[in-house]
Image 1: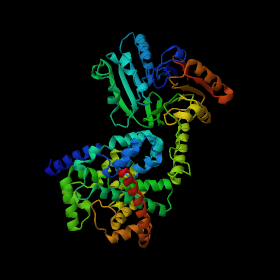
Image 2 (image 1 turned 45 degrees about the horizontal axis):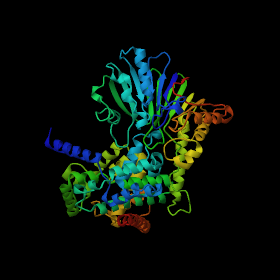
Image 3 (image 1 turned 30 degrees about the horizontal axis):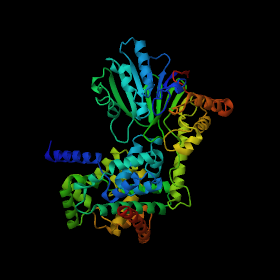
Length: 297
Length: 305
């Protein structure tokens, strides 16, 4: 047994421990607590607050998919999950994970802020949904695209929590060398966020579409045919979010050639991508206002 | 198959002069299959105590019981009888306890076995004579061997709960409690500030589809044992979201699914024998039920399927 193997196995154990107790993001937790502690809070506001939190969205889907298995296709829609689970069950679940003390300590990103990370995830979700609408998909499918975008970087949370110092070095090295962030994750930690994301999605029974969008959003050509449209859209949405500089989750530069190629594959005219900017900006602003109101009040 | 009701009450055991006829014990059903020694039990409410006593008497306390217990969920009224189920104290008893996972992610063994800790009960789990295996269940089709198929179906309750469909020699038994019809929880009032058209229509579609799946689950059942804790007006006035069904809805859904016999159970703890008799007069007639046989389940009642 070589040292590299032992090193990797230790890392995996630490990552798995974090997945088991992964908390909500500090950006959304105040609003989550406020909404879920309010017995009069409507299902609409519950859905709104949960859909702003990638960890909580993942956990709600995990809960429903741990018991429900219709036609072999897991549930990837938060709307349906809330109908199935009921408002009180979802509130109870959210409260059990949105504990403020878990937000502190090494859960905070050093390379970039939690708020910036949250903003990036939300932006990818919103852009993925807009692209799905542009492609003429039905609202239920658009929601799956939003969820896939929102959750695409979940794998970064355990890595940051367990290896905070090394993660800062990943960010520094990737920036200095102008390399993709995930290359340096692999180089310095022996594992990247795509693999960790895949572990999370599999452990949470989120189904193949989310497993593949978490694991292949940097290499959409590697995923299976049936999920290629979704994964390609998430991959493109990720590049657009980085290009728009709305939030950050490590990557700071976009390969324009890749952006053009992927746009063509997804079926969107690259020159029209800037049209998304205004509508995406508005939706992000609405989310910010929603959360800021909660934080003040 | 022979089905015996050992407990039909919901929420909490309700002994007293007003529940003598229908019974005050919480849910427990015993299923026997012809030509098999196989014993299948649904739920371990307070009714399981008397089932256990009868089994011990039949076995002469030999302690050689083999049984499968299928828990619909882990709310207290469905598990509180287990420590008083006499066979668990007998060496040689072998039990398989199946049930859905809970939202806290604790394994079934801890959730159920947690009752058998010293603060709640003088005998601890590891001191039990019986050999107990706990098995987490989710929706799906399971082969129980010897020609028995079991289908588990996700229900609509504030905790993950499963209904069970047992198929054996062309006969079908279904359980569907504790559950209520799926409904759109999202705002449908267009004048409300929070109204979202896509959310409202998706919510309605999801609820409609899930209710249709539910009826497919108990389609053509020879006996459907269904939650009917409330009347429609009770449900609409104050009980929506509590995870229990209005009788009127259940009768209509069972009719649509061409169920042959419908047993209404999980009676409200406040419902007296007189009230259940009055409800029987309304619902237990062929004109209302369209030819389907309907009855309000009674403790001790046996039904041949």
